[in-house]
Image: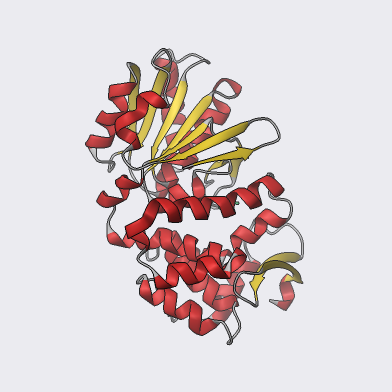
Length: 327
Ligand code: GLY
């Protein structure tokens, strides 16, 4: 299954295929120099598969986790590229989850003013969300994704069989973003996820999720208007993540709680049912006052207004501009 994403500068293709990693010669150019960037938790088998098809390659590993999206880690990687005489026509391969895609993509966007990169996402969250759309970033000391750019990959290669080695908790973490797509864009998709075993037909569900993401990214590449609907659940979700210092909840888990904060009583039971099905959290004792204070102090809020993403009927996300003081 393929999807083409149109951008203002370039278009790029997403390929979704079981066992794609065993047929990389169909997607990579044997004459190019590749730099594989992966964290230290990625199974070696995936590294070996990619290496096999990149004759000229070298590998950069970094410690797994959000803390590696730092200026320090960015600088370490840049130094390694320079020490290894990487040239502008080399291609970076981001092999891994969301952190890897964001970090390696940001390196690619800035190294010698930009070199090509390919996303090979191996977590469900990266496969259905972060590897597509060109958002790449690292964190400042106090603000997540404070330093970044819009820099689309050359292509995105998705092998759903990598999900077989993903711990269940991380699979469910990605499911939160899939549920979000249903909530904001398609009641039918929401009902399908609720009724069926997604893992049994995962290629199809990744494809359907990315069709929805494509719609938002192509309509508003630079996140000025409707792409923000993809942030449904993120206002409170980010507050939960920050409150627990990014330790207690994975991103999708925090988003699950964030979605529950926003919906009305009419659709809440459906959302609860699907979150419970995928073992996602539905309760947290943090007081609303504390969360709202965190949202108010979010350094990314430049004005007195906030674009809150709302869903009053499943499948219909919209932006509601509110005064932060009204939250
Ligand atoms: N993950 C939300 C976006 O790409 O805009």
